Image (cartoon, rainbow, N blue to C red; front, side, top):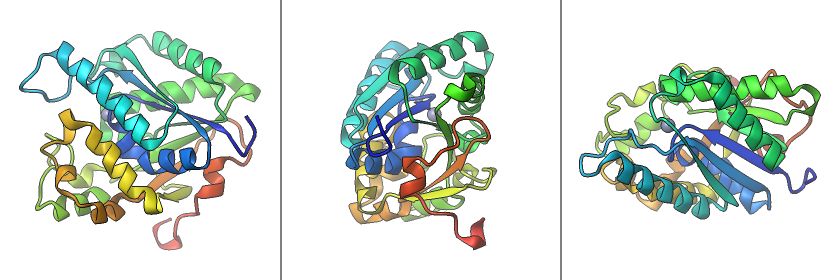
Length: 255
Ligand SMILES: [Zn+2]
């Protein structure tokens, strides 16, 4: 794969992280013929599900993940079965072995994962940030490029406000938690007309968002979630990537 048709490997903790955090990037990259492989390290069985048991929820969320990947144009959606809610306390070496194997299998040009703030200090997200960073750092000269995603501060507040104050993520009542502690981005990616596809992908995660603010947005409201923040990691390959081509530097006022 060359720079015109690169492979992007997105590594996340739960089904829905990929669409919520990176739906715009994934849709734009796929539209440019990039090969996108999405990974959820857990099946999301710990998510709120008053109606279903953990096994049923895991199965449902895995299907929702695959549906969202199809909407975004990703080539594959891989679900591993590490324990939801437990990633910081699992054997780091075992997680890193799986991540290293994913990189070896898919040979990505770019790996994308959470930034150090875990979108909103979610312990699983922060753990994925740490494990992916360690794996990429250890690959040295053979490493792909590594980018971290975070949420533009205020974006989830705008979504909640448009939906009359509903939670954007069930059970998370403070929309300002998203992006509040994010390190400054080095790139902003604008989903543009593909923002509606990002919203549609988020809505594929019915078990998570059927009663959330995202269920109440119109297609026009998708512009609220068009912007995504990315930061180039200190480790990984340094060359120009697809993200550098489609992204723009942050506005000086917010840098
Ligand atoms: Zn998550």
